[in-house]
Length: 345
Ligand SMILES: [Fe+2]
Image (cartoon, rainbow, N blue to C red; front, side):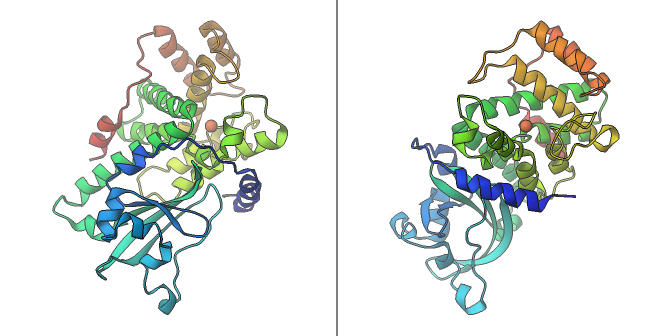
């Protein structure tokens, strides 16, 4: 059960809060190997990366004068148009027929992420469907695309909100190690790691003005922050991968006794992977500096976790987490993408 109405309501609030920041850092987008267009809410193209320029065959200056619908020449004749404004925090995916400057039709797979990013409202990631059939082979192409997509999402997060970037990486590593010590299979650990690395991806749909507000949040702002679980799940729910990572992400703020959000699930209703991420999430957050407070002392953190056993968190998971942190040899910063991709293939 996915509460679409509440997300839509919250998205309306989110849209009303949208603010812009000036610093421009598009390096991750610029160098990405697939065509990426950044457009505004009227579908005017505001930015095209070099892969998009090569793919469509237009000069950059030509592309920047165009509307996304100009790439789909049949739009008016067939009645099909590229989707117009989607609400902040939503993701859309579809196949379309686009045309290059030379008039060649090419079937493309379009992914739209609607996020506030340095003044742009939407990202169009465009993957030519023909690339799936190249000599690289389907598996290699997807492996490469998947890894690069993960890197890109992390880089976008880093540019927008360095706290979330570092937090997601460290939570993913800690969750993976907890899963390891609890005897999860290789396959289960991959799903857990992916959910860990993306667990706060929904924060891309939260306005910067709220996300990075230095002072205390008021109730309405905190309610908006809380929607990041549902926004993240919405981003991930159609990804055709073997793990229901959208569920793990959706439930990472649920608590055993029903005091969590968004649904107040209890005990067995919560996915085991979400329970692991919940413990790693809280442990990592308390052990790290934040804009509004310094890192807490390790003994305090471990004491808090211990106290929450069986009420908020699964006792076995907490015990393993405490053991890993106390041991002191755990590597928080390592990115495990390569290992993960190897297991997948
Ligand atoms: Fe979170």
